[in-house]
Image 1 (cartoon, rainbow, N blue to C red):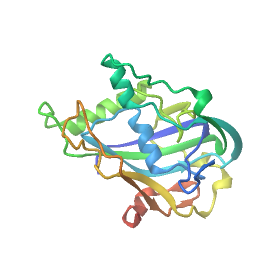
Image 2: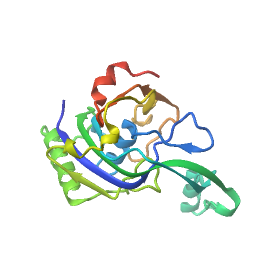
Image 3: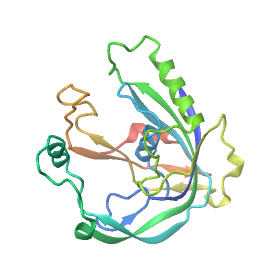
Length: 241
């Protein structure tokens, strides 16, 4: 196991979308490891490391609320943006009045999570990577968490639900877990993460102008929350596609 961290995350709202819901968004009761990996990558990410979630602490009672959200049905076209940058006439803009749709969503509110994780080296590195790379990545990530530095806004499942605070801690205060989360709760089959066919490595081997595959599959697991604690590492050997 590589260098480990413990952080406490708070937010007003969160939505860890169930993939079986095709139109309306419905959140899982708790975060998925993949969503938390993405949140940590918003703080610090390099091809040389990958994050592994070991434990999730659910402090607050699991509360849902229904909202209506405006969504757009299209994405900004990379090709159109590239064409315009090269001087060709091609409008990359999305006009929300034309592609907007209103959908309902069942989201979590008033969330607080403890996340224990570590990172591992992937073996992908450049010529300048020193022999003590693991310690270097640890120190950079630790410093960025402590200073609240990010390169994009860390979010709780959806981009419109940002994390209010991310705090590095030495230990979790398990006494502050809500009594409503007591007992052994079977969370059912949940998304663990989305696995891309290219494993995050550019097909052309060029990180400056990378070409990735869109093909991906969802990996599932069936965790239990015991007194507010999800021991994610316990279920890694039983992942299912």
